[in-house]
Length: 289
Image 1 (cartoon, rainbow, N blue to C red):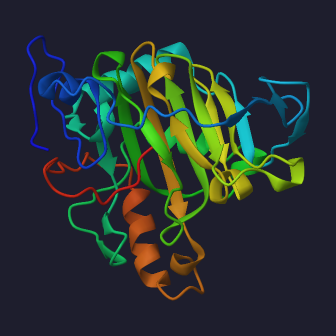
Image 2: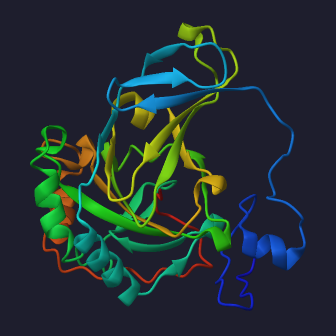
């Protein structure tokens, strides 16, 4: 689908295939989200960060342990949030799919062909240096060394969302770390094949509330088994997030591509980076959240 600009400054559309946003829906008079409107049975749960349980919200009370989620509220201050977003808005936002805009700090990657091009990757942005140091003070992130940062801008005027997906695990390592800014939202965790251990044959959703200025870590089953998504209905105000990714074992010392991993890590940790100006008409090769 060609990029579309609507009056009123809503912005460009870069949707492709089955992806849709409000911009392309209005421009093509599609009259819907582009997804099937057939309702399917879904079991709904809400994640409780205090107990670590997913608690049922649509039927008789029941729960199950939901490991692999770490949530730290007020990870950044209001002043830091303002400075971070101002710095992002000073740079160029590139239209992405499903009504999101993005900024990439990392190598250009073709995940299908498993090829990496360092290209003009110049490191993570300067303001991230202090944030990464703070992350490493947390028990769950003591050895966390990110080599990629993706900033995403979600707005209700564009119908911003992201479909259920699993992040790549060939290049990216065990932990996905996200800082949520400007508004509260929710991450929807999905297990399409159901949860046999709970005798749930239909799709299961677990809603993880993300407070403004909080930090989220996904690892283990929450990273590799459960797909994650941001639903359109959960973007009520502008939301900006920064997601940080570390290297997989293949690119760490002792791995087959340890030399390339060391090169990427050295560049990332210079903290002198500028966002990559990715042409939105080209196929996406980056992971997003």
